[in-house]
Length: 590
Image 1 (spheres, one colour):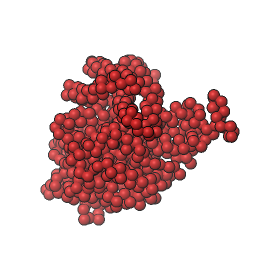
Image 2 (cartoon, helix red, strand yellow):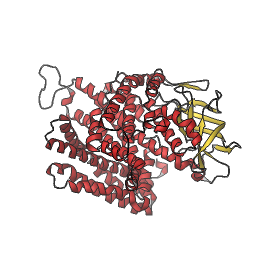
Image 3 (spheres, rainbow, N blue to C red):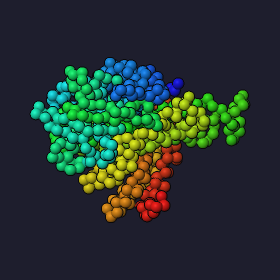
Image 4 (cartoon, rainbow, N blue to C red):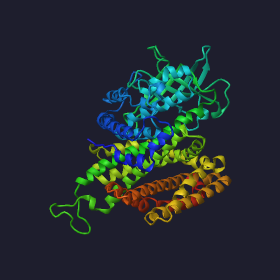
């Protein structure tokens, strides 16, 4: 049985000391979200995840979902775990008051995501999808659609999906074939097939509300002609299927508790969300939120992998300290005496805590986008545009790396199902593929986000970075963080100019270097987070606060700047190498 303890102390530090969210919540008129409320909610949510969700995780992996006679059944215990959460009103907390919610801040929703993913990633996907569907209906649905669906989806009484991919159309959604025929009563008949639909069918709720991309008659070619529709599995008040059937579920490497379905829509009744031919724009709002949630998957699985790998290493004895016997009363020393074991564990820990800080910052920016004044909205929107592909790509790549290190540090035990960590790696591996592969995220960053509005997004990020470096330039204790951060920022500026200049002349140059550029960019953002955390820790120690947490955080910052940030040197060299060695390689020799 694996263990999981929600990282409450780290979130307390991030929320209250680094990002000062109580002050932010007051500025943005989030009523009642003071420190006591936030800490109490975090603690209770973490305990529910540990006691109600975590025990179902291994069962979901071993037993998986079953498909029989067109119906999908979730693994044992999933329904009970889901009901515990919905009956407690936890998912509804994220909804507006008029829909039965608490209108909780988005920085809190981010933390909820991490705890749920660590405890049961398969089940967490339902919650993430529900909130995404709720957001679209509440923001773009008609008053009638909101009245029928918003509260039930937000609470988890009904569940939701997003239906984009078709057998012949993955990333290129402009060529989808699903059709929507207008009806006299204002509804539409939806006909087509969608695949790779997460929790497209299950028995967790009485109804499933599908958000379906389809094309109206006479619509423009390509993605400009796509519209978005609400298509329920059952029409409200009707026990008969609304023409929505599941024709099968995929056999997968991991995430066995989450059914990946093929859905057929046969003259299903649906209703338009937003205006005609705006489906891609509206759906991308949900996709961008889901991309941030997907980035949290790397953090959540990385955290539980670290906790269990560390537990194993504390108990494991193998060999002796290379500098001499450490424990004379035992036949071998703890493997924690070995530098390579420490390297792996500390890299796992640094990955998790750096990405958690970055995601928490993003959560505060999302709140500013939602409720800030015009200036803060504009600034936050520009930063989120840049950070979304980075958090999605870097978070999921590092999540896979962290889970892999968890297996490696445990040796053969890590590879065995008995110890649980190998499941985390198999589950994590889908995250770099979901919601647009990480290669696509890198192209989006390098090809679109840094050049939007003549580089406005990039400039919006540079000034807080350079301002922080300038503010701490003369602080001796901060020099070991700010100097390498400054070098990384300058390198990022130079690489960005190179990508723009060379990419305009040859898109292959930009595409070949996009992934390494994205990773370089992400490492620079992590360096910024670690420097900000170090600043807070140094201030606390200077004020006389004696807490080993601050010492540990500062030592982990040293690990990041010594072990991880130097990778940027090699990444920059690869970006500068260009594309010719790739594109001039003969296809016949592949």
